Image (cartoon, rainbow, N blue to C red):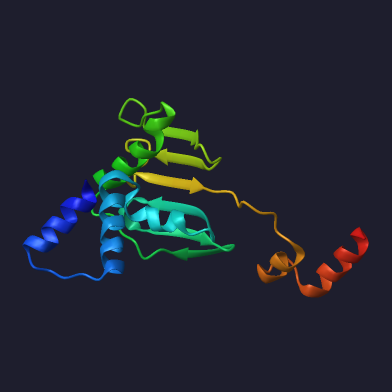
Length: 160
C-alpha cells in the first residue's frame, strides 16, 4: 500500500526516480511510519551492538567496540517516545506517566532500557543493547584492541 501510494505520488508529480532511490524512499517512509524511525538503519547494521538515545541531545552507537555519535536526529521528544512505545508494546509493556521506566528483552534477545520524564529529567532516553550473532575470535579481539597481538599469541598458545 505504501509502495503504491509512493509510486502514484511520484507519477502524479512527474518525478522520475531510479529504482534504487525508490527502494530507499520506500524504506525511509516504512521506517518512519511503522518502524523504528531514524534508529532503523542503525539497527540494520550488524556492526552496531548498542544504540543510546539521549533525548534530543543526540544518538550514540557502539560500533565494533567503539563509541561514536550517530548521524541521526529526532524531530521531537514525542517521536522518541513513539519509538519506545513501538519497541515495548509487542512485549505487552508500556511507557507512560504511570510507568515512566521500562526494562525489557526483545524477541531477538536484545535488551531495552527506556525512561521518560519525570524519571528522566533530560527527556526520553533509550538504550538498545544487541548481542553479536557470532563468537569473537582471537583476531577480532586484537582488531578491537581488547589485547595486543603478542598477548593473544601467548593466550592462544596456552589454550592449545
